[in-house]
Every structure is written in C-alpha cells, then in structure tokens.
Amino acid sequence: MIISYIALGLRIILMSVERIVVRLLGNDEGDIYRNTAASFLFFIIGALFLLPFNLFVEIDNFKFLIPCYISSVVYAVAFVAYVNALSIGEVSLVTPIHSLNSLFLMILSYLFLGEAITITKVFGVIVMIIGLLILKRTGSFLKSTTYLFNNIACRWMFLFVLLQSLGRVIDKYFYVSASPILYSTVLYFFIALNVWIFLFVKKKQSYICEIFMEKKAISIISGAINGFAYLFLLIALNHIELSIAEPVTQISMIITMILSYIFFKENIKEKIPGSILILMGGWLLLYNH
Image (cartoon, rainbow, N blue to C red; front, side, top):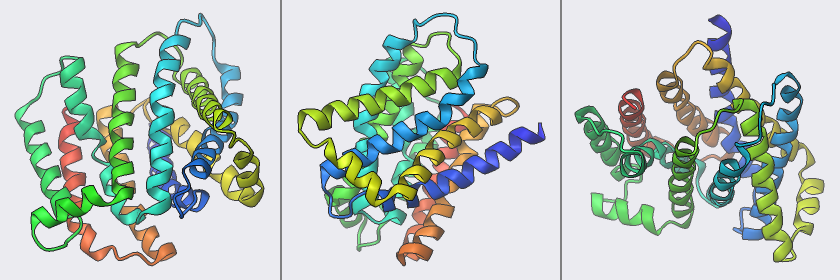
C-alpha cells in the first residue's frame, strides 16, 4: 500500500517538472517542425526507458496492435500541440487548461460511450468554466474568454486536451486484454513513428538530430520523465483507484505554476484563483467518472 502512495507522489513531482522541461526542449519561436522533432524525442526516449520493464510481461497475443496504432495517430497530433503550447506560451497560463481534459473526457464519453452525466458532474463543469473565465484577468469575463481563444498557445493546449481525451475514449472503446506497460511502450513507439513519418515527408527529419545534439540532457530528461511518470501511475493503481489517482495528480498543476515563476519569472498571482477552481471542478468530474 505504502509503495503505491510513494509512486503517486513521485508521479505528481514528475508531472510538475515535465511541463517545465518540455518548455526548455521546445522552440520558443513556434517553429512547428522543430517542436514536432522535440515531440519525437519526448516519446522515443520515453519508450526506450519503458522497454526494459517489458521483460517481466507475458505476451499472449498481438490483437492490441491495431487499436493501439489508431490511438497513436491521435496522440501524435495531440502531443505536438502540447509541446507547441508549452514552448511558445506562458506555462502558468496553459497548464491549467490542461486540466480541462476531464471536461472533454466527460463529454466524449457521454457521446461515444454512453456514460451518464450526473448532477455532480454538471456542477463540476460549471466550476471549471468559471475558473477558465477568470484565469486571465483582462477586464470582463467576455474579454478574458476572448483573450484565451485568441492566444495561440492556449489554442494549441485546447487542441491537445481535446485530442488527448479522444485518444483515451478510443483506448477504452477498443479495449483489448494487454499489459498496460506493454500497451504504453508500443503506443510510445507508434507515436514516435508517426511523428517521424511526418517529418520525413516534410524533409525535416534532420531537426531530430539537431535538437538532440543541442539539448542532449534536456531530451533525455524529458523522455525519462515521460516514461517513468506513466510507470509510477501503474504502480500507484495497484492499491489506489483511478478515480482517486487522477484528481490527486492534478495537484501537479499548482506545483508547475510555482516552478514557472521560479524559472521563467511568470506572473502567477492572477492565475491562482482560476486554477484552483479548474482543479476543484476536475475533482468533481473525475471522482464520479
């Protein structure tokens, strides 16, 4: 039991640091190809860190490969958007938007999986929307909302949240019996493959080596964080329900905001009230998911 709680604590720390590291790995000028190459490194190195743990996994069949690849296409686009959002935007502004994944997941689960929407979930949605409206104080609620949707980094993060939620729904809809560690490792390799194909078609694959040589330590650290954060989640789920683990993990948002102030001197004071409301709304949605 204690190991699961330690693992969950370590996951929170890694998720907090991940957004800072991805910001450092990406291109702050918004070069889509360089940020796509950074996404490749993020996943291929993460997959390599996960690979040794599959030595302890029994493989019964390979039926999971097709649904896994379908998911990987969605996730590939999603995480390119994720890297872009963190690279060109304020980490303390786009990170709370990341927590809206529970809202998108609830909507998509209702539409495609027929999952119920409860009164508590509706209240959670209202709380999250209020939090979003006051996240960036630019006068009225309308001006704040307009600012978020006109901000290119926020747009990238909204796209990431939507596609990540869609990927999770696809995973659940096409669920097959496979070890989570095996599934995630193959998924990471598939995502990296999809990203590489895109770069190859655009003749920009050389950016992968360039970024790795320029930011070797950051590349390795980001991949390690990506792989181990998921591994710690699996360990935590041995004795902690997902409906508890996911809301608790969202605490990482607050830690990320503090780190964004320390490393990038971002103004986080105005974003704290909205972030807390988004966090509370996410708790209400996920706890009843």
